[in-house]
Image (cartoon, rainbow, N blue to C red; front, side):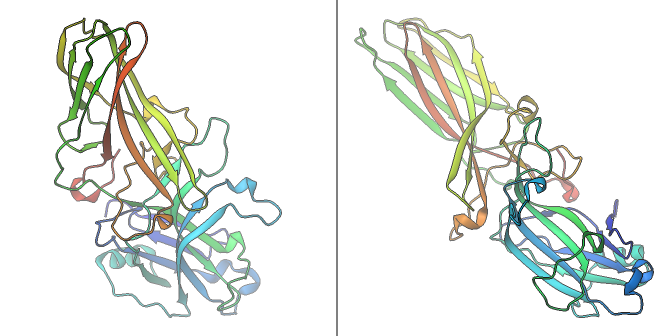
Length: 357
């Protein structure tokens, strides 16, 4: 194991250990979350000599406001799914994995193993890019492993003190399928005033899915039978974010806007391939842009396309992300000719299951 992630509670009595923070959704099953919690009662103050239950929980939640907005009892975080186990006194006893054995050796004495099975119908981690002046945690869907020391064995309303808690954010991620499908194609024939004949355009992609950072070649054919000149080509990529959990909030933001100086004279033709690459680095200031789930102090990328499973309720997925390419011919004297192509953006599955950007 190259790295162990750990977090210690404020009182020093609990330390949470995880072997990784990225868990892959393989469509039919999600990686198990295997971890360990070390219990060290020497810093528990007035709790010494008493037995208090220790729990670990995994929550998938939608955050639609930062923590500093939580006032007057209002909560800007809604749990989508939550599972909780008691680790001490011993209750939850998972089947031991190689990951458990490695973490237990790292943690030492008084350590307790746990395992969470993430349901396949939960959303992947997505965050909404904050504005330059925004503070606190970003809005979006996140997964959090939390261990805490309680006073009561089963009181869901008990307020747990922050110093008695250790937590780590993890990510549920999905990689592109190994086989891609045929690319989409669109065509249009448009007439203009004061012109007897139309402008025809056909645009197509080689495949239906591209990787983040990969160049996207668009094959374009134009037949200009009109008496007008096509002055230039304009290509945009739009990201549509559909927040389906707490409201019907759907909005679109342009993540690429590129112009090409190619012209097509009257009664002329054009056939070529124009290449684009939508990148987060060109959109750092756009508030509300959907990104793949961000871990603290780590960079990320544009959100991957949401892969909808048949039979899964949309509301459970929290945030749905999709993309489309618009190819626009700008015609002299006013007017344009536009076609749209759907686009899927995802990550390839890396060797050794290591998450890279």
